[in-house]
Length: 162
Image (cartoon, rainbow, N blue to C red; front, side, top):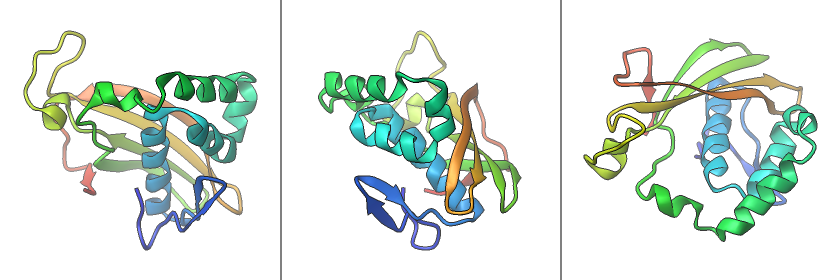
């Protein structure tokens, strides 16, 4: 995802850069973290190395694993998620110029591909990911990211961006 006001504004070595020091910049970094993570591969590994250096340092083999998984999928990882769309709803449980916690909700399976029978999840639940980012003086860096319980309904605390 890209915004003319909140970034990213540039690309350096295949990694989008220039996310604004704003709630919008933090949310866009979150959206791209989620979207690139679905495909894995070298671009995601480089993204993680730039924007999540502490998380990468905690898992020495992570970058190699991300690159290998992307190579093994041969660019086809998203084929199984045909109809997947980027996060469309966002909310902030906290946001200051130094630190933001962004919740991002994706379309439900039914929203993405139509009504289908599912086994493991409700077809109408929205997957939710929470990402915390800290401003380092130059850019946002991802401090943590985790899945939250899926939601059947999104209340008015969520803002639809797309």
